[in-house]
Each structure stands twice: as structure tokens, then as C-alpha cells.
Length: 528
Image (cartoon, rainbow, N blue to C red; front, side):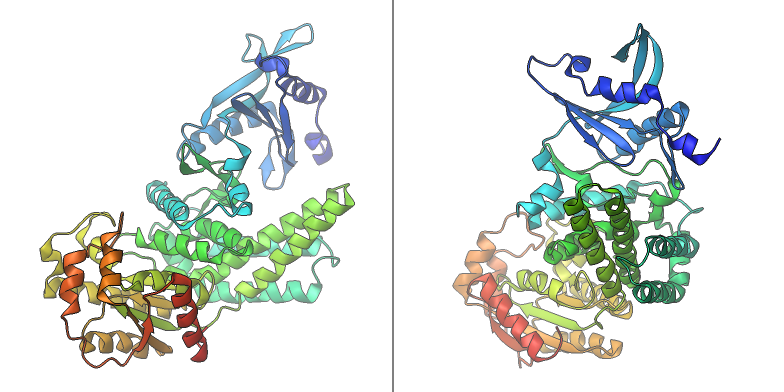
């Protein structure tokens, strides 16, 4: 049988589509309609409080839904893998049955002629794409999302027969072939040559790291398609859905490659600050001996690969659209993705910024807001003593620690662990913002020494605010990683900080003013 014959729809599937688009199939209330959405591989029918997903009878090099048995198996697999992250959305698989006499039924007693995935429906406005367009994504929501992705990855099945250097090279080569198949109207041959050569060169430098991470268990059964359109706000929690079920190579990948899709999507939407927040929270949730600083070296390649995939997929979609205006819009987006893929391969060199200050001075907030403006996308790694102390203690970021966790010896171990992570992140090519009180001159000298050993430019900033401002801030904290309260802030006021060689910044005012002033200083030093 030829490929064309195998991918062509047959009469019964058209009948299934018409049946599922009919409100009578679901016993809906009078006047209630069915919304029908279509992609290149599926039909989705929104009926009442449910959604039904029908896989098209198609076959591509990466996907085969050409037989009833294959579609049934894919439906079952889709439910199983998506229940890992969205068990309350994925309700099960139902048959579309032939009841005789030209009548079809959903879950009837007759012979199954097709299969659908039944899901609980959520509002269109709950999709993260819509929330992004509405400006409704915020730090708390994205930190919650990062927590859920980290937990999902930690529990995901470890895979050793996919990924690694060979798996990544296959994606790079497929991207190259797809761009060349698209022709030169959208992507010039010289630009494609540059992207492919740059990707292959970087891949060569990173091959040992890629294989090492696979051997260490970083290649897992991930989501595979982790962009904003496959995340929703369900029962007030960020929820991942629509993971890839049809091709194991697409979802058995490095966890950072899985995360990179989300980071790239946020970045391309002009939301680099939120991408930086996701990355840092994800890494903060890693084990104390992790933090994945070496893996940061992969981000330029992984972000570029994700943008490249979006570029050639967008070009393919634009090529078959009959609406000229929509085709032009899709083609324009494809070119944006393509040139961002090139940009990701030219990351800015790493720098180190240290932000010190007494409790309540706003140093952690300043460190977080500076990060997206520094170095390679999506911004600097923020290494924070408050986070490292909790990780070393093996407790949650928001658990309070006892006094013995703040002895001089405990603080020494915390700083040493932080310095180790900072050095490894800088060696991986990622800029770093170091967030710690850094009260004494010898502590500040030790911070600078880390940058000196790494051979990167350094700037130390000291956030300064009067006691009444600091007391007001620490007194109003809720759900904070920092354990410092009013008593700590009062004690620090009497401390002697010694000679201050770092640049002092007035952090008593509005956040935007403090951040703007700090960024101006950083730019004056040529570090951003």
C-alpha cells in the first residue's frame, strides 16, 4: 500500500467526525452546541463539560495513526502518560461504535470503528497562552509551575536508550533537513548553513556532557511538548497536559531540553523575566548536590533547537494554509523563531554580580530582578545562601530552620556550597547573581575571589535601607525562603560591616527605581 493510500481518510472517519460534531451525540441541553477544533493530527470536540479528542487517520515519518489499532493504542498511551501530571483531566478512552443502520454511538454496544480520549473541559482562558496574552502570568504562578515541573521530572522514568549526544544530533540534523525542504523563500541557504554549522559545532563541544547526563539519569520520559499552549490553570494550579504519546524519541529526552521549550516560549513572547524565574526556581528545587550548574552549558543549544523546531513547523503550517493573511502571519512567526535560534547560539559571556545587604534591604528582590538582564538567555543563575542552607538541611525551601543552622560553622558550609555552585555555573558559561548578606569584609573578599578564579568580570552591590524600612519589610513577609525576622534585622543594625568596597545602592524606595539604578551601574561597567 502506498503512503498516500495509508494516510488518506476513509469514509467511516468522516462519518465519525460528523457524529462527534453533533450535539445529539452527547445528550446536551437544548441549544447547547459543540465546538470543533482541528490540528494536523487530531480533531477536538468541546461538548458541555467534556472534551473528546479523535486522532486523524494519518501517517507521517514521526507518527502513525493509519490503522484503528494504532489509534486505539495511542489513545490509551495518551491517557496513561498524561495522568502523570493531569489525572483529573484525563478521564479515559471511549469507543465510537457502529450500532447498525447507519447509527453511531459514543461507548455503545456495537463494533468500535474509532476511539477518542475523553477529558474534563477547562475554560479557554485558562490556557497559559491566553494568560500570557492577557498579561496575567506572574512570579508566584510561574514559581508554582516550576515546582510542578521539577517534581514531575524527579519522578519521571529514567531512560538510557534515548537522548545523549546521538539523540541531540538527530534533532539538529532533522532541523537542517526540514529547513532545506522548506526552500529559500523563508529561510536563506546561508542562514540555514550558519544555524546548522553553529549547532553542530556546539553539539561537538557538548557531546561528552550530553552522554554523561544520560548516564547520570538526566534523560527521562518527559513531557516532550512543554510550551505555554500545553499548560493550563486547572483548579487554581498550573497543570501540564497533552504530552507527546506518539513518538518515544520526542519525549525520552534530557530534562533540561524539556524545560527549554517553556523557557524559549516565554522568551519569544517578551517574558524573559518570567523565564528567568522559572529556570532559577527549577534549579533551586534540585537536590543539595545538584543544582545542575554544568547542565547550564546546554541551554544555548537547547534553546536554539527548540526555536528551530518551532520555525520549521511554523513554515510547514503556513505552506498549506489557504488564508493568505494567516499564512503570512505564520510565516512571519516562523522567521522570528529562526533568527532567535541563531541568536541563542551567540550567548553573551558570563559575568558575576554580587548583591549584599542586611535583612529587609531588598537584596533578594534586586538579585531576582537583575538576573534576566545578564548573560546568556534566559538570564543569570541566582545563587542564594537562603536557598542553599535549606537544601543542605534537606528541608523544603519554606521550612524554618533551627538556630543551629545559623552557627558560624553552618554558615561557612553554606557559603562554600554556594561558591562551588557559582564557580561551576560560571564555568558552564552562565552569568551568576550571588545573593547573600555578605556582612563582613572577609566574606565580600571571598565572594570576589570566586569571580577572579573563574576569570569573569565582577561587580559588588550593597543594598542599603534604613532600619524602619527593613523592619517593615521583614515584618510583612509571608511564605518567604528567608528565616530572618524582626529580631534578626534589629541585631544586624548594630553590626560593623567594615570597609565597604562594593557600590552602595539606596534600596529604600520603589523596586523599579532600585532595579533601574542598579542596571545603570552594571551597564556603566559594561556588564549588561
